Length: 212
Image 1: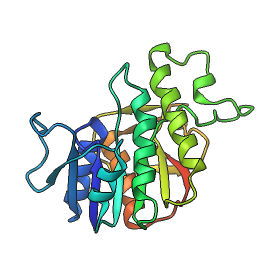
Image 2: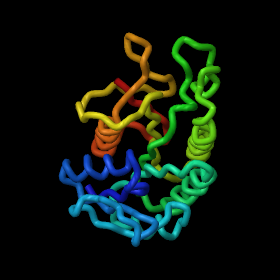
Image 3: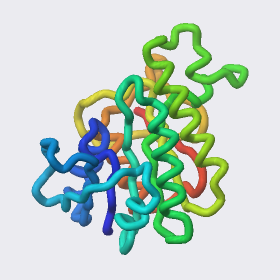
């Protein structure tokens, strides 16, 4: 496959690039600042662009099978996430190119609850609230779109660097927890779940989640 990755230098995006290359796909890794060291694999084609700009998205999606967005703004710049979402959806409208998005977990409903979400939990860390709410808006913007074949992947509550095991469970709108009540997945295995979806599409214009 020909895959373009926005947010390619981030924690999740860099792992998505590595996973896609390991599977033999041709990856275009998008960076906003070409002068900044990116540390991306030599096998990735580096392109300059900004997900907030529809014309950049359309240009970098031309001839591609899928666009993956793993963009994550710096603290204090959370509003960029909505701008990037609008740019991606506008740029891909009418192209037929699929969009896979790494989103947030905050909008997942709590297991066995009354519809309360992760961000509704009194123990939710206040420091995470700005990015969680930005991700909620990100999901809402996708749900309003009717032109792009998008899929939105919400990770487990705990998403950290770790090992690639190749195993995970999938769900839809409810937070997945293990027998101990823990909701977790490594960034490496989240990339596995995302590339599995890219190769074998199952989710169309909907959200899904992955955890151990």
